[in-house]
Length: 190
Image (cartoon, rainbow, N blue to C red):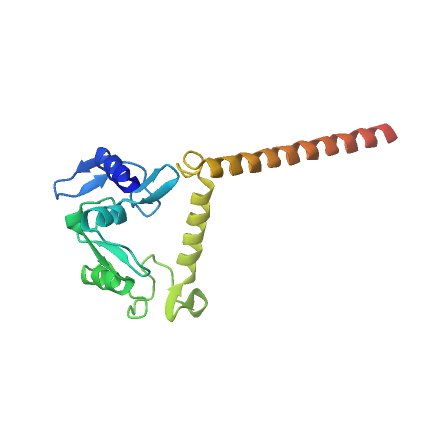
């Protein structure tokens, strides 16, 4: 029943592009994928579409890839199930992948110099330190922006966040009172 309700909502929030993509016009996550949340349950639109229209039961390692490369798209004809390796092969075949090790230019794709100090190895692949630092800064900045679902869908999460907010406010008030008391005591001793 939940899946049917999610699909109904997705179809209400659908714009059909000239390429036939069913673009989700509702909330998107940071990577551009559509995201649905109903009655405390949530899911990515492209995965829900495959589950509903293709009857696919997901198991560990399953990835839904887009033939159209449009992350907002949930048209079941544009989607296929693969694994991470298959998704990477598809990405490289379409020219979207980048292999740091095979590139002999003096800079990374973002223009940072390839010096021994600016290159590190992660999971057997060489990476740019400056690019990683920039990605971390962007991630932390996004974490500070409230996600549209955090305070609106799950009653337990809302209650927990309100409790945290109230505790922070009480702690701030106590600090202010203690500071005023210290200031008054210093003034009284003078």
